[in-house]
Length: 104
Image (tube, one colour):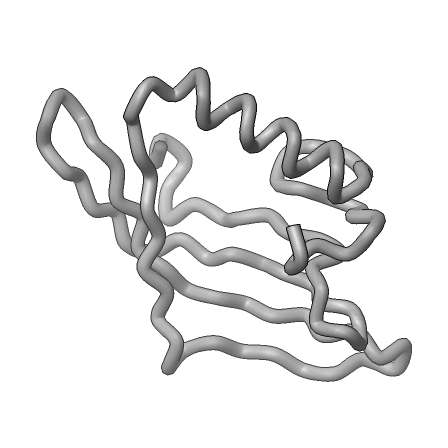
């Protein structure tokens, strides 16, 4: 919640929403997941960012996604999370690029 800006333009495949709505939907999704987990391991050394004229920071974070598949942990490297942070370093936009089209 504190990492999201009050209004987020893009949250993965969703459009604009308030941080209250996003966090509420994430809590509901967690309840429906029934113990299934996804984790992300960022490659901090490879993070790229810049400051734009409006004071925001576009940030690219390469990461490896891990998830359970029939009791076995699968690790898929090559994801990139694209963030845009406002001058207060809150997320105003976030989405990911997959390493290949059929990646989970």
